[in-house]
Length: 430
Ligand code: SF4
Ligand code: SF4
Figure 1 (cartoon, rainbow, N blue to C red):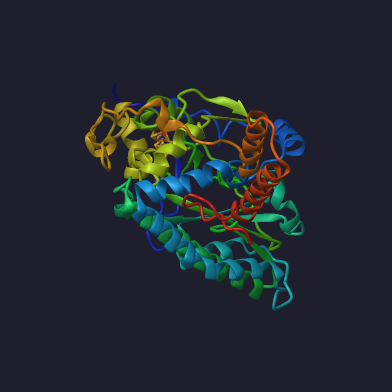
Figure 2 (cartoon, rainbow, N blue to C red):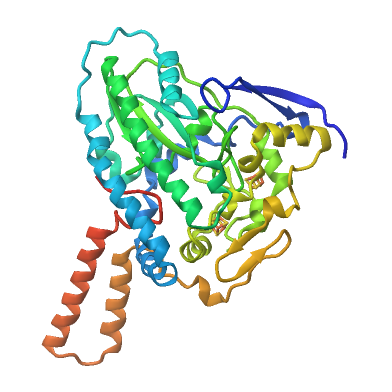
């Protein structure tokens, strides 16, 4: 295809502290939008009239199903997840306590953006950005717990280990994910301590108990753009970035969204769409809650994730994740092509028990493979209660009492467990 015309050079800090800055050359024909296409009044409307809720609550029935199914098909992954949950539990109170503490000194009111950025990088965060805390992205069940007096969000990304991530799907990559969550817990408490000692309050979202979806604020902070795979493609780590925010009243200068060329690059690439074993990724974008995006079909994703070590093939096969944004954009500028596309090195993957799938080959599954309960556990219990009552004919008082007791137990068990049952999202309630 030949060399493209350069449209823009984006300069970003190096991957780790001390690394030289990098320059990302974006071809003219990839320029489209800073951040993501968004209709702001629509985002506000949906947030007001149809507030967001955590997937772990709205789809708790499938989460319970996944937990049992995983136990059956890959007990070693089940054990790994429960081990990581045990390791993260001691952090739950430490993370939550930060928001209850008062600053240890009086603030002097000067902008501390540079100092906070430097501290976060020194601690080990790979990407740091500042934005207004967008309260439209708080799950409805968490609104009353999130402090309303902290107007700014510090967006923080930790890099998940590169080498282990390339082993997706499998236990090695899941360990890398769990380790990244533990690192986030440790670093966020240290950064919050720094803010408290500087005279400012803080509250931490993630790696346990996220306030809500984080990608919109990371995009707004210029730390990447949304990929077809539904993940943030960040300059150094692509979709290997593990995200977290910390809200604060510290005076900070806000960053702004950047056009890295990802919107158009994804249209040409489409590798994640083609390689998803569950066909859960859509090729076409749709407008959803005021944002134009490729909507993931979760009922096609979760059965694959559950049975194949958390899957994550959409992370592994993304060239921005594998090679970094600068090499991918340089290659496109020189050739008009997507780096690694069509190669087994990028696109090949192994599914345990099914075999190796090189570029161009995909596994097939029976329709029953995707059978999975939808909605909440309470919805499921009610549905079963209705079926029992309508198909059981005349019931004695004792039989009715038994049915009611079983129903009540299921609802109570659902309510107590649903916030702890996650794949590897660490969305543990506080
Ligand atoms: S995790 Fe696997 S099944 Fe789910 S969207 Fe990604 S590639 Fe598809
Ligand atoms: S694999 Fe390609 S299409 Fe998918 S998110 Fe990455 S760059 Fe975009």
